[in-house]
Image (cartoon, rainbow over all chains, first blue to last red; front, side, top):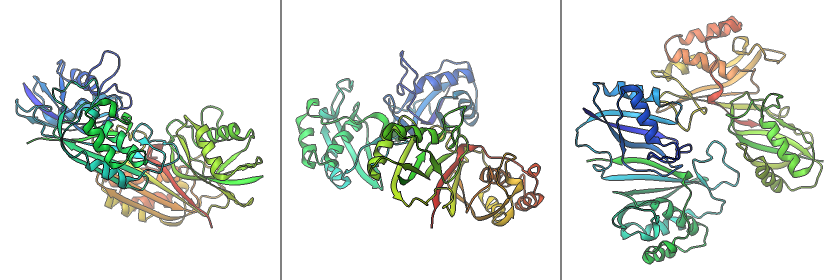
Length: 246
Length: 246
């Protein structure tokens, strides 16, 4: 048995999310079926994070165990050939130690949330960004974001379906970057709660619209109550950027 | 009657091209039907260029004549609301003189052709770039491109269906720009022949692959024979960038 680490890009629009579901297509299923076509083995693919329906990835990390002898490059090429026509691409494939685990070995996860503030509807970017009608003040959003950085109880920003044992998380980075009509929110942490990034971004948009003050972000955080959430951003704009390993 | 100049972005993937067709959807039809829904008028929309099926636009220019009194901003907003769910966006709308013509007043047209040289298949960029398996030498492509700049008979690089009176065109710019795995070819001219950009790019890829020398581009040009064409690039990577007016 050889364990391979995969770097995976995917367009989340047609998928119910990363994880296998009974009721629709998933990225995990697409890769596992491609692996079966290549190796004849029913191997399970484990990812650094379980993304929601409609969420995208630039460089998700995952691992898969294969019994059949196969070189990493050959496996990557064969998976890419077989995963079609799903919008999934294996960007890198490398042999790793048997105890390397895409999820449990991961020490940091990085997301980008893309907001488009143009008036006109999106064309090719539809489903790849959240269009918010301007004006949206990125400076105010940055002030609001600063209130959330650090170790906190993020119950307010956590889905009621979240299965994590604790609502405590350490948010290492929550930066708001404007480039013309694009506002991106970059979030980094060892791990995130379910819907945490989307919930933080939704409230930051309220701040950018002037409906919340930057201090209202702190008040929402301190409420430790999902009912204090202002707005949950749609999945469209969320991209899993990368995962870090020791 | 008021003439409005429109700036239009569109994702060409679902369309048979700009121009109205009996056998499938077109960008022109999508905008004309939106205009009818807004004004009740059967107005014709004229564009700076007639793009092929699958070709995209970042800022196509067009004009439309409307009898009903309506402000330019209001017309833009209403067209954007009614053109849905087509991937078409009116980015700008302005009143112009009655003799301003999107096609005949245009003095320069600019295109970008996007090539992706990564090994992995494209995900969200599928249909928005031409994926060419590396290696592809952008430096050689630039040398080949330089052979085509200037006033020439472009018969070799012209579709047999081209309806232009003359195969003579003045190519003002044909630049090859590399940024990581992306190679873009930028083409500028007062006007282009049918398939000219795609035909030039197709042959430049042969040069980049080492199958043609840069001088083979000149030989193909001087042959003035469509049979001398090496390769016609697919429509996927072609973007109408902008049109210039005096």
